[in-house]
Every structure is written in structure tokens, then in C-alpha cells.
Length: 546
Image 1 (cartoon, helix red, strand yellow):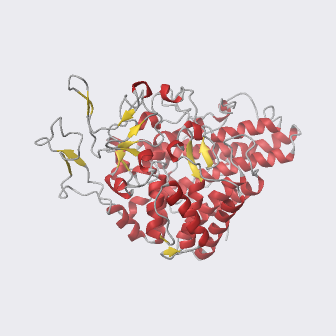
Image 2 (cartoon, helix red, strand yellow; image 1 turned 135 degrees about the vertical axis):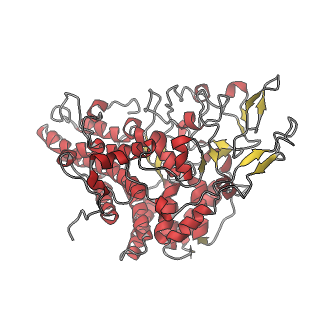
Image 3 (cartoon, helix red, strand yellow; image 1 turned 45 degrees about the horizontal axis):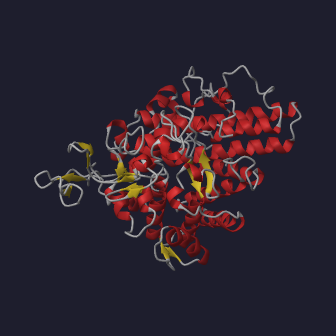
């Protein structure tokens, strides 16, 4: 399946419609009737929902710009990409539009399967169990897309049938109804997906239950919801089921968890299936995040790195830290193998004293998901931003920490035995930090930040904090002081001391601070979509009849 034996032509976008985010109709002459001829054919087309091609508009840029820059974890200030760091983007930001359209692309692909596959398959006498399982895959993928949509944009349009909506005024639906729609999709998936994937990389019932735990936790975090307490309990129940009954365990080596060798490991509950195969078929992070061509063949990541706030979140003895970001003295034997590995220094000079690598403004660069050169990983990195390491959307560690957060509930701490156990599996056994017997909400947020940095999901933790207490979330973001960076004092920097911290000074605190407001935590609907469908600017409407 990693060879993508799929009919991508059936998933090609038709750009002629003004409603771009619904225009993913098949343009191939092959029809559903003569494609859905067997259970295997259904599975192959459902596999498309996991492929990088389908997720490309979301994965390649928006996922980390919104998930990591907005969260205050990834420092980058260039042009429209940097607008996410400053939270200064408007409705016409190119990447904002790509994110919206990319997620609705998944919704549209899923809807094509949900609406077209069953009748076509039944005409070909495909077993009903295969049809139901195909629907479960499509509804699970659609739920992931809507979870991201509603956490970024709040009220969004629920679409169950692309064709039915093409000539209809589009309205956004209330977030509470979007949550209900997501949980209905996931409950169907949890009931009808297998416990073990038929094909590696496809969802299982544990995928659906894991996301249900996270969605119910998110709903519960809206403390003004009448059923908030009930939702915390549901989050605990679904997470407990995964923890106790799935048989899954954390991957044993965090150092390689984001490399090709960990693809579809037991910790991976849902991941975008990446491969070397050309533009948009793989993971682009090695290209986007690599510091220089000493690290990888294509490198655009010199100006990107962990914010000072993120760096300060890691305890000195945290074993995960070098595999999240590189800083002074870190050594990586599996990068630049031809030259004996790679040691991170602020400045690297050639024999003539010319700078080959210079410091950036945070004195660190990203390691997570960065594979090195193609030769370092057996050809696992292409030359078109296409690497073969999968991109996680949900990991088992996430479900563990969702359980802990659900136990804390609207309070400030928990001593629940299972919560302490799973927290220590991450905090102690994985990170090498001292065991704890109580977990506070502050501990939990810090642990999640360190565990999931640069995975595009930490912004959602801030959103749950925002639902609990908007002022606390805003204060948390502003305590990061995004304006803080380093710069070399050239009056004291010399070749002899440039690879020490001595000549690097943090930015003057009198610099203009970057201040975040609550209004910036809900992204604007892309301007092009409102131009095409002006009713998207109207107040949200209910989707379900009361």
C-alpha cells in the first residue's frame, strides 16, 4: 500500500467551481460502479484517505504553521509563514486558505466514498461487512478533518454530501453541533473498524476511541456546556478502553519515533502515510526544517527553530530534548554519516575561516521529523520535499495524557492511580524524569508541550485551556514573550568564543512585545471562501433540530 496502489484520479480536485472547498469530484472516466467490485477495491480506495496526496494542502505548511507557530513553539518570522508566529495573519493569508481547503478536501474525499460506494458495491455483490468497514474508514478520516477545522475556525460548515451543497448557500454551523457530528462519525467508526488494521497504516477501532477521548475532553473543557462533567467522564471511559484493552504500548525509542523505521508502530493511531515519490507524496519537514545542506540535501530551515519559551520548558535531564531540537554540542551519528555524523555548533567555518553555518535568532534548530540526507536513511528522502517518515495525527501518548487531563477535569490536579501510571510512562520511563505521585494541570500542559512539540497539535491544548478560562490561555501565551531572541554582540564575539554562549545576548526587553488577544485564537474564514459564499460570514446556525 505504501506504493499507493490507489486511484488518485478519483480524488482529483476540479477547480471550476466557485466553492473550491467542495469541488473534489472525480474527473476520471472510471465510475464507481465499475470500480467498487470487491472488498479489496474498497480498502484500496479508503487507503487514499491516509495518503500524503490527500492531506498535502494541510500537511505541507499549514499544519506546522498553525499547530506549532500559533502555539508559540516554532520560531519563524518570514513573510506570510511568519504571520502565524506573530498572529498577524488576515483572511487572505495563502496558507490559511490552503489549510481550510486542505481539510475540506479530506471531508470531500470521505463524502465521495460515503455517498457513492455503498450502492455501487452492492450492485457488484460486495459483502456488506466490507461496505460497512469502508464507511467506517471514511467517517473516521472525516472526523479528524472536522476536529481540526473546528479547533482552528470554531463554527464551520458541516457537509455530508458534496453534490447536494454545490448550488446551496453555505452557512457555518455551531461548534457544539460540529462536535456532535464528529462524535457520531467516530462512534460508528469505533463500532465497525477492526481491532487490528487489515493494512498497516489504516485506522482501527482504537483510533476512533482515542480520538473520541480527545474530542470529549475538548467538549468537556467548555466548562459552560451543561454536560461538561459528563463529557469528562466519557473522555476517561474511551481513553481507559484504549489504555487497558488495546494491547498497544509506547514506542521504546523516542530518538527514532519520527523516523521511517517507526512508521505504523504500535504507538501510531493515525498517521499521514508519506513516501518518496515526488512533490506532495511525502513528508516535507526534512526540507522545510533542516538547518543547512550539512544536515540534508535540501534545507530551508536555517531561520526556524524552537522558541526560547519552548527551550526553557525542557528540564535539563529530559531525554527527549535532543530529538526535538538541536543546540550547542548535540551530536547526531545518523546525520551526515559520510562525514562521521553531525555536531551542532552555533557557527561552522571552513578551512579558510569562511562561515558555512551561522547562528539563528534562537541558537537552535529543529530535529524532530528531520531525517538528514537521503544517503543517511537508505534513500528515504527525495529531492521534491518528499520524505518517507509518516506524520502523526494521533499517538498513544496523546491518549494517555488525555486521560490524565480528563481526571483533572475542571479542577487543578489528580492523584488517580491510572492517571499517575500513564503520566509516568511518558514523563519518567520515556523522558527519564523523576516519577510523580500527583499531576497538576500546569504539569500536564508542560508535559504535553515537551512531548508533542513540532507535531502540529500543541495549539489544541491551548484551545482547551481557552475554553476552560480564556484569560488564562491568553496569559499563558503572553508569558512566552515571543519577542525574545538572541543576537551576537559583535563587539565581543570572536572565532574563539563564537561556539560558547558568552557573546550571545537575549533581545532587549524594551523591544516591542508580541501581545496575543483572545480574538486571535479563532482563525478567520478565508476571504476567498466568503467571496464565493458570502453567507459564510453570517452567524452560525444549528445543524441538528432541537
